[in-house]
Structures are given as C-alpha cells and as structure tokens.
Image (cartoon, rainbow, N blue to C red; front, side):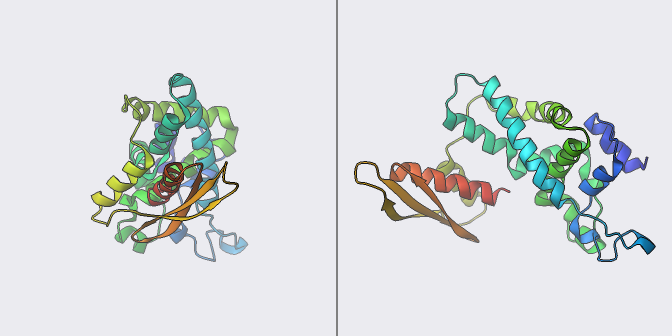
Amino acid sequence: MELRLNNISRALGYQFRRLDLLEEALTHSSACPARGRGGASGKARASYERLEFLGDRVLGLTVAEMLFFHFPKENEGALARRHAALVRREALARVAETLGLPDALVMSKGEEDSGGRQNPTILADACEAVLGAVYADSGLDSARTIVQRLWEPLMAESVTPPKDAKTGLQEWAQGRGKPLPVYQTLGVEGPQHDPVFLVSVSVEGFPPLTGRGASKRVAEQAAATAMLEKVTK
C-alpha cells in the first residue's frame, strides 16, 4: 500500500478493502484532467466530490445520534446548535488535520501553491469524503465507529450548548470584519390565527437566505441557521 494511504488508514484505525475509494476521497478536482490517470484506457481520475456528498450525510446522522443519547435532557434547539457546531467546516478541518489529510491530498501544483493543503474548506470536504469512503467500503457501522472516536473529544469541549444561530452568525460576521447580518421580513403566510413569517437574512459576500417560523423571532433564527451553515461549510 502506498505510504500516504497507509498513514491515513492507520490514523482512521480502519483497513480498506477497496483502496480506490480512499484514493478517490483524497483527490481534489484540480487533479482530475480530462484524460485522467487511466493511460490507454482513458479512465478519468475521480475527485472526492461524490464521496463528500455521501460522507456529509453519514456524519450528520451519526453526530445527531451521539448527541441524542449523550444529552438526554436537552431540547431540540440545544441539540441542533450542538450539531451545527460539530459538523461545520471548522470542526471538520480540525479532524482532517488530526488524520493527516493535508499531506495525503492529491491536487494540482497550482492549487497547492495557492494554499490548498491548508484551505479549511478543502480539508473539510476531504474529511467528509473519507467518511463516505469508509461507508461505501463496509457500511454504516464502520463509519459510525470512526466518527464516534474522532468527534467525542469535540463534543466534550462544550459543557453547555453553543449560542443560538443569530448570535453565532453575528459573531462570525464580526470576526471577519463584515457588517452585521441584515434581517428583513418578506411577508406573512397562512391564516391570521396561524401565521407563518418569512424572513430573509443577508451577509456581505453571500446571497440572501430565508427562514420560516410561527413568529418573526423563530423565522429569523431559521434564516440565521441556514446562513450559518452556508458560510461555515
């Protein structure tokens, strides 16, 4: 086995049956020219994007399961805030560093020279892809075991649930020197006795996103949650 693949397998504590899945999970799209690596066969090298899609769902489910059983007295809102914090880009990038993914990634020289190996978004995407590769290789139980081992230390860092989405989004914007998020009520749907508020939130550099709720406050929180997930992805 190639040394870099062996190092990742060892860090995961998992032996792949199909090494091509791990290879794919570590391949950035910049390393996927049309002619691929297949030589005469013309088979193109695949990037990690499809496995990232799969791994995102595996991670989301497993973290939700962990939180549900670890915090039996917390309500849905508190669990949702914990979940968002544990599956956002920053958390994934930290795990990627722990696994040694920066050195194992395959990417173009241009991408590497531009800081690709230290790019939190690339690291987060590759981390999800690796989880997706484990799932594709041997199913949910294997992937769950890895997620539990790698995410339990992160889960233990927060004794109390993270701040609500509006506060989190505001702090994210302030930390990057951006103007504060702007909320706008777009309308009210439904009957007067059971209204549904539609609210948008705008953050500099991102298209507006909307949220719905039984009150303006709930709708703003929904919009902020959607935006926070977007900007930290």
